Image (cartoon, rainbow, N blue to C red; front, side, top):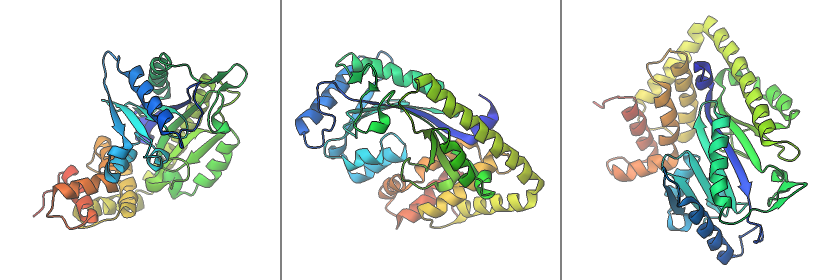
Length: 334
């Protein structure tokens, strides 16, 4: 994988929407059917030879643990809202998670770092094959896979990439890009998908259309647009290097704030995090991409709240966030 791809693409994800053929599509008012879906999903994934799946029943988790899973992109906001019937089967390496009783009976998703949609798709389809062996999915010869929302009918696939585009944001190019991408049947959303903000200059690029396109065509389309955005972002990074003093000043200021601030809310963290990751990407700041990407999860609200409970000397979540950040940046307190 090219280094410039990793610098811009944080992760790739493929999600498959599937429903069992013999059950109504929504289990919202049927606890019995919801329980059956969980049982079937468990059965399909218990014979994995190399990886084990852990079952997370959301009603048995507190809100902090639910949001912690969401911050890791292992479950969705919609599943959290259906916590009375929702569950997730998560593989031990966290590359595959199967959400049960979200909008559809199953949402099978596979995640990979960098520009790796093909690998993510292979993982998702391998899990789907195991799940389908227990009970057939609802499928129409002409329409394809049938889903609760018509926009997912067809392949039922959503292929997406999370891209870090600070320079395109800095030069106010995102609006034009969103319009151009929409003409190709793709969309750009925020960090947690539909309806979320583009915090930290992070954007999800994904397909809008699932009907009338093959899985291969969807992956090719999203990958092609992703590569174009990588090229555009890198051109502006080179331009930024020519204006290096202003850019470097911004990056180092964020680095200083992250190292020495005593309290910080999530919104401010995301602003400085974007500069931290950009500085790591272009070799300006003494931080690795791996550290920056790990902080993207561990410095979010649910994770820092858990950290605070383990460290009672900390008075607030915002104070705990700074402790988490500074520990990861190897900063010792005086």
